[in-house]
Length: 387
Image (cartoon, rainbow, N blue to C red; front, top):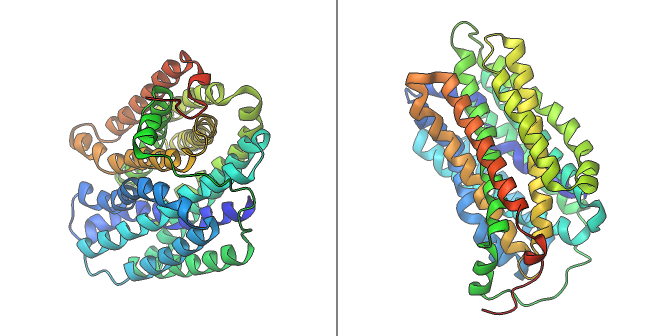
């Protein structure tokens, strides 16, 4: 479990590394906010597109082999991103980074579902998400500091070397799967029938809204805080992501609550807290904005752990890896949309408009949770019994 968390941490170092660099890239490359936002959407979009394919193919190979190979591919694409001479080349390498991250993420979720006892799954997933959070913070923090001190290309060199370290550690210490149950892959029609059941779709929608809120808030708050009256620089904006560490501390404590009270109850409470945190960022004081972001991101990390636990309950073999792939697709489609959608209203509404998108996503997730609660979970636990 700790080894998987390490792998997740190393992969997430790269995913959002360009977020604190967006105002810098906008000025340096003379691009629009929507264009530099594509450096985030390229990776998240690649994960969304490739996750179902990974989910369909992962059962044919060793879990450890897929995770380690993907980490090496991630290291290579990250180092090559440092050679980009413009936006187009950078987007290509960012896209390939996303494909590698998808393989790590989808297979790691399946690995945990197979290797961890059901009664401890809430704790396991919370630890896994916490590892993702630490990696996400480290990538943003290091990218911002390195860029402020030297050049943005050098940030990818540093992150690529960390990926090399992560791939080496994972290869040495990740145990091979011990509880994989042999089964025939589900027929495509039955698999699609399963993943389109309303409770499963509602879980996918929750994942979409969770990452949409997180990426929208942390991609565009940099534009808000780099302008008057705050006027923060790149290094200061990278320090802003230290609020992620609050989430890394909070999320593991949510695991026992998920195991005791259930995913839906924890999800609804976390959504309420996240909406309050988002609203607090509208207060025109830096301390209030930072505190609001800490509450928002912590609540969204808890939502992610709860949604993943709910998916584990709904999806059984032979649909588990396929369902994980589709969940990751929905999750990162939310992140891809968030890289661009707030730009549509930024000129007129600026930061309050972005917060409006975030709160709207929270409301949608709450509605999905309420609709899902009215459906008996027993109807989706097993495999379909016929047409």
